[in-house]
Image 1 (cartoon, rainbow, N blue to C red):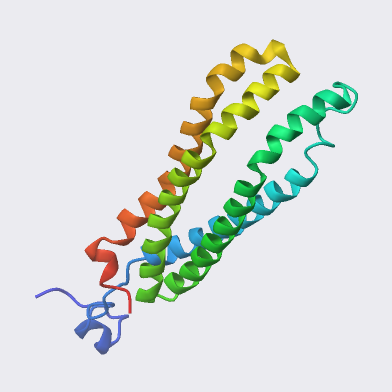
Image 2 (cartoon, rainbow, N blue to C red):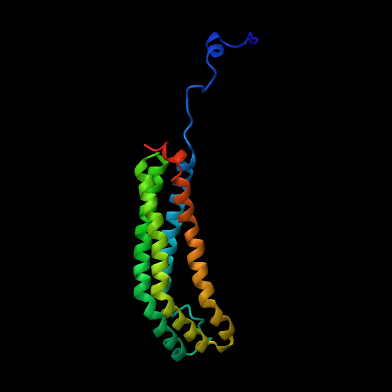
Length: 192
C-alpha cells in the first residue's frame, strides 16, 4: 500500500484527478482557427487582385512604355478579366465556406468537418480547372510582356510552367493536409 500525504484530502486520495474525464482532441479547434485565418486572408487577396485588374494599365510603369505599347499589352490582359471575375467569385464563396467551417470546427460540430471536406475538394478542383482555363491566355500575356520588354524573353519563356506549378502545388497543400488530418478516426470521434 502506498503512503498517503498528510496534506491531501480523503477524496483526493480515493480518486486520481482526471481519471474519468477523457480529453478532446485539439485538432478540430486548431484547424478551425487556421481555417478562419486562411479564409480571411484568401478573401482579402482575391479582392486585392480584382481591384488591381482595374488599375493594371495605370500600374504599367508610367513613362517607361509608350501608350501604344501599353494599349497592346492591356488588350491581351483584358482577355483574362472574365476569368479573374469568375475566380474572385469562386474564391470568395470558398472563403466564406471555409470561414463557416472554421467556426463550426472550433465548436466541435461535425458539420464543420463536412464543410471543410467539401471546401478541400472544391479548392483543389478549382485550382486545376482555373489553371487549365487560363493557361493559354497566360501564355499570350507572357508573349505580350516580351514584346513590351524584349530583354525579359529568356525569363518569360520558362515562367509559364513555373508559375503554373507554384500556383497549384502550394495552394493544394493546406486543403489536402486539412482533409487528411481532420478525417482521422481519433479526431472524428470528438465531433458532435
